[in-house]
Image (cartoon, rainbow, N blue to C red; front, side, top):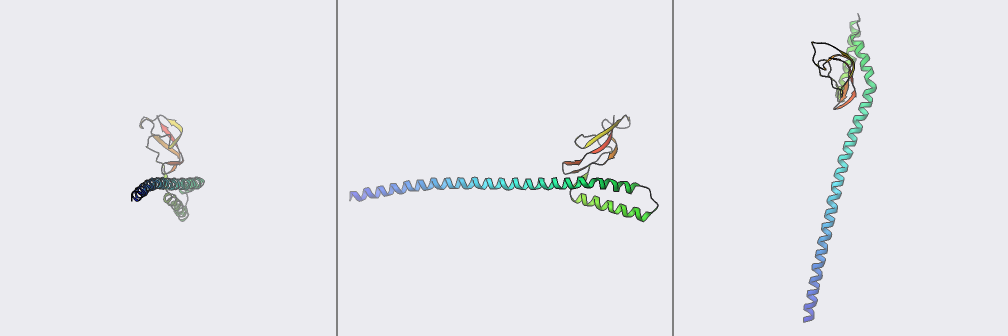
Length: 161
């Protein structure tokens, strides 16, 4: 009978040891699972950010190649002509192109009357004008554009004082 008691005690100890080992193994597996899920979540975030950056880069490249066309259409709109229907047609094409760029997130950089910002503007000339404030933009030679916070093309401006 004592052998039975000893055998029962040994079996119970083995079960406790097995239970402890199983608990430890379960904790290790749970920890690995949590780490794997965190890595996967980081991967998804990083991939999403990379796709967004690539998208904005592609849009920026395409828009940069279209900006000379916008400049020429603006010159055509401001050119004097006697043919009013021709002028309206050019204005409509210009407006359609500007609207399309706007839908892509392209914004015009504000210039005249604003304070010069080297991140947004490129100063091509400087003048003394007492009616304007320090580093105030007097004139714009070429429009600048940006997508979000990224400048696609700097504005070429004349800065006062």
